[in-house]
Length: 408
Length: 184
Image 1 (cartoon, rainbow over the protein chains, first blue to last red):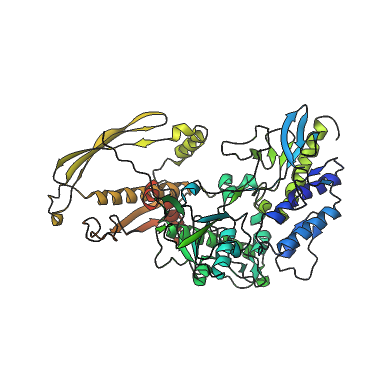
Image 2 (tube, chains in turn blue, yellow):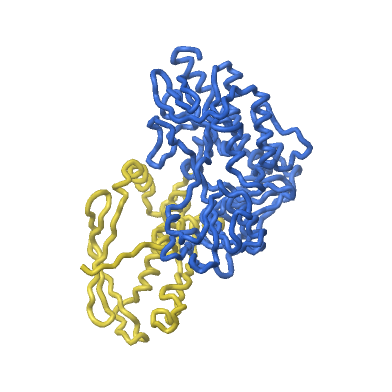
């Protein structure tokens, strides 16, 4: 098992249940990415009651709240203890390659040979920064959402936040409130209200079965896996942080950052269509929820159906911005991130560097992946999604071991 | 996805099959579109189109098509053809309309009529060099669709939104493109 995050630990627990001999290799501490690659104010998008791992759930006094990062780290660490996970901390995997009837795993603290490898090293190891990055004029400071901690890291003055996923909208809001005027570059995005008909929108995602949709039932899986995270924020007030809220807060919305030419950032003129697409998709999702409530006679348990105002196009939206004028002093890339497979010496990556797998069953025999977006279900992207995926894959893994000889 | 017997005259099965084939052969997906232009007189020019490159080899339209472009009489020209910026509107309208038909076919939506009006506003102080703060090109383009189809208003809006998302001309107009002009 490579990685002692929520996904690797969930699988470790399932392996222990089946008495499969295993070890969890961790480059740093348990929940390492949650410790090192998250900003200070971040809280989980899922409410506490929904944040669960195999046989382990939140038992505090605030089930509707959202965990801070220290709370997430504590939660995952307590789970590791409860599961008695065989974790080798501070052990960085430097290469994995095929050897004999399994794999040879080299680490900075010794090598080992195994029959199976589960890659649970995370979906967000490296920031995906646009290829136009080198064209940004020098005085502008650039930082990715993985390195961002709080607004005080940024110089005073205007900030261009690129990307309108959960990260992008949260950072735009926080930075705008710090007194730095924010311009938010908006491409394809997923709009969601925090609460709908009196319930958390993620309650609806779970209850209505949307999140349980399997990967092999999804029309365009590549697209589903590449979708930006929904525009949500976990706050005690359960606020909705959509683009209208950001406009009210004073953020300037511009189109997708398409190019930087002669020191000018050029933005797409297709912003209104991005709004229309996101509004239409949100309405379809809410229709799905309403239909489910109707079909399952749940209308009495929830509030009346709601509809939300369309995303308001800005009165004027600049198509270009002079990056040398001093109006923008820094850029925050909230343009997503991708896994680091530089250590993986097995030919299982596609031409875009993505792992080739069928619901986590990697093309190489005995190799599995966990903790990737929409791995086996829509909910795979979230902490509580790891449990069902881990059970499925550990079952497959145990079958593989049983059919290919030795029991361990 | 619901599949009905909608027939909008778009061979979606062939398009989807091509998509699958090209996934495995990205080189064949690289197309080059070409036009050849000849100056006639004044602002009048004649542009012809027939050949293009794609699927790894030279291709040809069934017939050569010729387009006359000129400026209107209010610009002291002879008005022997539509203006180049109007050709841009032709491209946008026809591209979005083709997209609506293809997406509708794929979604099993029968179309009865699809009409659109395209309006591009432009301040000609830009091209005349009167005010350098005014851009040469369109400052705003508005497309208004009127669609009669076996679908809800929301489904029709989704067709139009999706056709923009997959439109080559919409992309070419809304996003910057490198343009290199050389003298041979």
